Structure formats: structure tokens, C-alpha cells
Length: 128
Image (cartoon, rainbow, N blue to C red; front, side, top):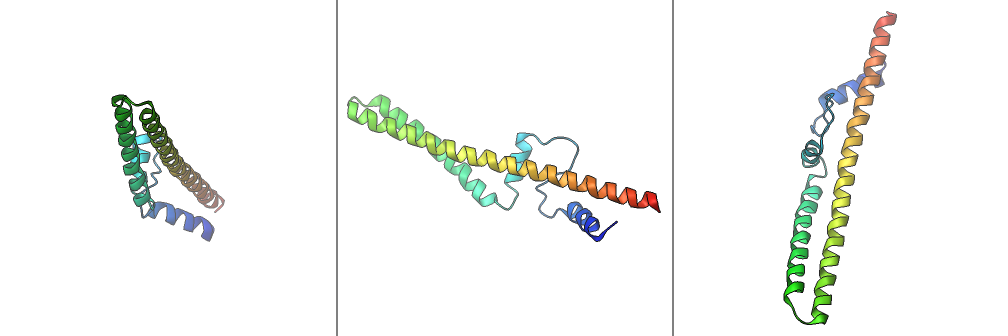
């Protein structure tokens, strides 16, 4: 086995941060969410989740105020608030799911690296 294969095997087996599991079972969305809170971007992910809740709350508040007011001008202003809050929420949610997709791809890449390293090791042992 080459030095590169040895390094790949060691790096995969060590897996310091524990964000990528190499088990045969596919990770569901809850495992990926938990992994996103353990990785290098945990602070950013946590802040984005908090902001998602804030903007949903803001949209609900603006929607309630829109329904309670009688003036048409104020209704339009509150409706704009609802729309803007949902747009920001949608952007944050999209970013969060792109982060989950990145973690899933990293997991698959690590699995392929491990398979290649194991195949190279078995080929080397088979030729000796």
C-alpha cells in the first residue's frame, strides 16, 4: 500500500471531529442536523437556526398585526413585513439545507476514499 493510501486510512479512522459517520446505513435528516451542530460551522449553523425562529416569529407577529389593523395603508405595511420575514426565513432555510447537503457529500466522499484505500490494501496483500 502506498503512503497516500495509508494516510487516507489513518485520517478516515481517526476522524477527530466525529461529524462524518461511515456506517453502511444512510444518514437521515436528523443525523445530518446533529452532525451540522458538531462540525466546524456549528456556531454559524446555530445562529442561522436561531435567526430562522426569530424571522418565523416576526412573520407571525406581522401577520397578526396585519389582521388586527383597520387602516389599509397599515395592512400593506404589515403585509410587506410578513413577506420580507418569510423571504429571509427561506434564504436561511435554503442555506441550512445546502449545509446538510455538503455534510452528506463529505460523508459519501469519505466512504469512497475508504473503499479505494481498502481495495488498494487488499490488492497489495493479494500480490504478495
